[in-house]
Image (cartoon, rainbow, N blue to C red; front, side, top):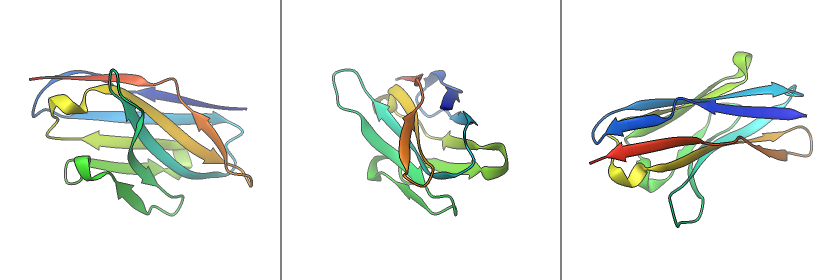
Length: 117
């Protein structure tokens, strides 16, 4: 079994910064791609950013230039540095990881990010 635990969410004013972390534990011997998703109230969950095991990254257009995804493979931890936050960044942020030879998907429980304008 694999557990993903997010942390670092909170309330911040527009223009501020937050850093989210996602720590993986359990059967994590092969963590492939990881990613951050978010879900705003009344909206579908959407992709924010992804990162491969080799460090290649991809970000949604809405966050390019403001958010940076990274990972520390030795610590089985992924990060999301969020700068210049906007009210539309408000939502629950979820960590996702594809693990093992079959790329089985796992999700964290989510962490709330609220940006006040």
